[in-house]
Length: 241
Length: 59
Image (tube, rainbow over all chains, first blue to last red):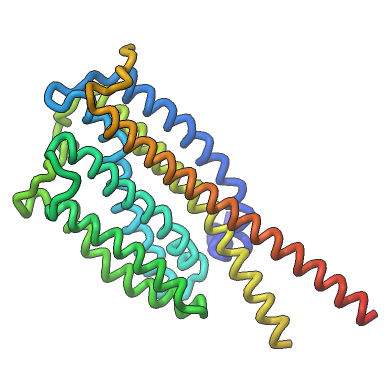
């Protein structure tokens, strides 16, 4: 099987259509399971009571905000370096979902901050760098939509996306580099987690659900982008003939 | 299985508020995508109709 043929938007379009239900259905099931475990099985926290349950949406949203940005920059870079149209379309498609998750991380973080810290917002390193991530997404989306020629828009977006990648490790390590109000990482790959098993499972299931949801939505959007660009190209051809 | 207390121990506004907000965000994304798809289908149909009319006048 020649996988390179799927680098062409025309060939990828039907494949994406076939893949969408394989991501959307498990996402819906995992959302239901994650929320069930989070609300019905996980016990209240000994310090924060039930307020900690915001974590089941806040942490996956924050992780996906960062992960999707790296993925967006990767695709934008590939599109720029190899003039791969589909990669640039993928970057454009990821941007909106990434921005949505970053916005959710900020809002749910504010909802969690008020009862635990007594304030909705502080100019803390973690929160400020996440806000910058949100502005980078908005900048990428605005820049792309302000340039009419898609190729030029893709190139300009790629520069911004690649420069902005530096912000992702800053967000991740901000709680170690600076003395922040935001708590440190509860889950580390090489260390035993410090939270109850059911809390951890609920969070991981919600993370998987958000990830599958993102893939499904990105595939739906990239199909729209492929069609829009093909229609624009066809219209342009009709006008110039 | 523990039935959750709907008041969330006094934190109901914050917990349900954050989940409601997340639900709105996801619904907004899905609805805006469906509008985008619908607009494309309309554009495609109108282009096909225009092309058909153009063929009729030239033939």
